[in-house]
Image 1 (cartoon, rainbow, N blue to C red):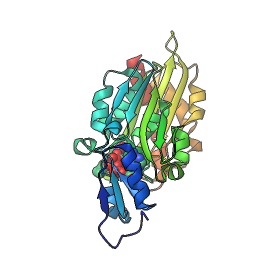
Image 2 (cartoon, protein in one colour; image 1 turned 90 degrees about the horizontal axis):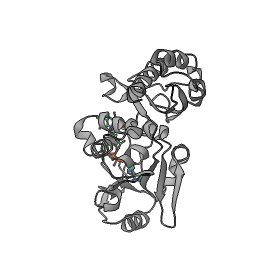
Image 3 (cartoon, rainbow, N blue to C red; image 1 turned 180 degrees about the horizontal axis):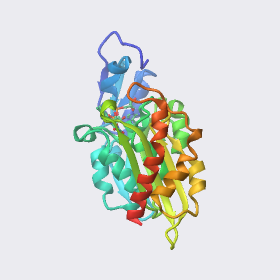
Image 4 (cartoon, rainbow, N blue to C red; image 1 turned 90 degrees about the vertical axis):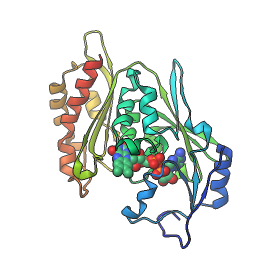
Amino acid sequence: MPGMLPMTAPSVAMPTSLTEALGALADHGPGAVPLAGGTWIMRSPLRREGFAPAYVGLSRVAELGKINVTPDTIEIGAAVTHARLAEALEGLPEVAALAFAAGNSANPAIRNVATLGGNLCARGFAAADLVPALLCLDALVEVAGASATNRVGLADFLMHRDRLLQGSVLTRMILPRCGRPSAHARLPLRKAGDYPVAIVSMAAGIDGSGRIETSRIAVGSVEPVARRWTALEDALAGQPLDPARASDIARSLTTGFSGREAVEAPGWYRVQVLPTLVGRAVAALASQA
Ligand SMILES: Cc1cc2nc3c(=O)[nH]c(=O)nc-3n(C[C@H](O)[C@H](O)[C@H](O)COP(=O)(O)OP(=O)(O)OC[C@H]3O[C@@H](n4cnc5c(N)ncnc54)[C@H](O)[C@@H]3O)c2cc1C
């Protein structure tokens, strides 16, 4: 079982197709888990977790490394690294939030190996940058299991992640292209090992007079799991793209958050910085609009 120290070194399988990967997970039983970039798994001992008895590597499964941009959607394979993602999405304003998140998370060495799938599947990782960015972009998650492949909304995936991933592999994300500008604002702290202590990702439809028609706003790293800030989405409808005003409105709506306590930052601080991050996200949207 993951979380228990195995008596022997873990086994590592390196399949070259998704079918083989799912077969290897089934063969090794419930203790086997996928291995992507390994940047979360390698730190298991620091979290006082043991290694799993068996890992199924995904880096040689070609279909998981593909990015497909069409006029209507952007599909991103789970094994795409943060660095490759940032590069591939450069110049596409509707996914600017995701490109910025991928290009500014962690550090260059980590970005070269950490994957999209690992960012979404690392249980207990509250500070994942790609999760709020994908939430504000209405992303769908595709999960392949031994008997079926399903697509679910990202919020549902996060809620049922453990069950959905049992013996399964996250294969790709599907993003609709709706032409709205988007932005990602994060507050890293040296004390937090450069992980962000709070994140605000935002996508907005802007009308001809520069006012927000509709928006999607997601908050990461503040609570254990990222989520949409729907009260703020409603309150910003009809407002101009004014960072100070958006920040003030956000300040009046933070009571619904219960900040997570951790050694690197107290919960109240994570909540307190949210209005500033909202202002920064709106400023970034205004510069795109
Ligand atoms: C010092 C440091 C700083 C970092 N800072 C940041 C940061 O600021 N922001 C940020 O977002 N990230 C940051 N990260 C990286 C973060 O750990 C990774 O982005 C991500 O959480 C793990 O990606 P990975 O590919 O290495 O996954 P792995 O470590 O290989 O796997 C992580 C988990 O996901 C599972 N998994 C992986 N892929 C799949 C899949 N396709 N299907 C099913 N399950 C899967 C694994 O079984 C495991 O449980 C940092 C890492 C380090 C070491």
